Amino acid sequence: MANKSTNASTVSVLENEQAQSVTAQLGKKIPIAKLRRSCVTLFGVTPSTFDGATIGLTGSYTVDEIKTILKKWLNKEVK
Image 1 (spheres, rainbow, N blue to C red):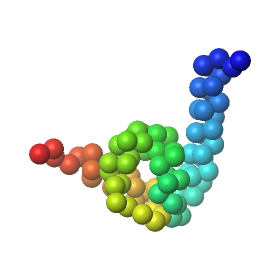
Image 2 (cartoon, rainbow, N blue to C red):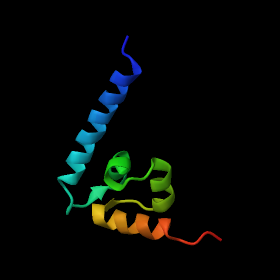
Image 3 (cartoon, helix red, strand yellow):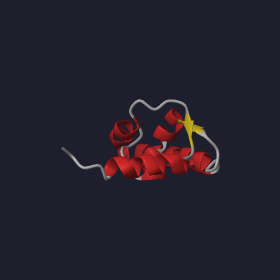
Image 4 (cartoon, rainbow, N blue to C red):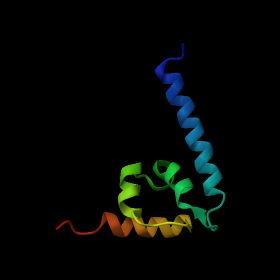
């Protein structure tokens, strides 16, 4: 039976591979679902934060476009 550290390192390796795949396409439009899968590595935000900032968005975006959307959403004043 695998221990937690083995499982955590396996998940980490898979996340890094996904992020590297996405990062290799920095200038290209990438489906929002694929960006969400790598949001922690690419943008430093949790999936729930990513979901909140991108709610209602569909289609494909560049990494820079999503960074701009996230920054704007994170700096938005809470009412």
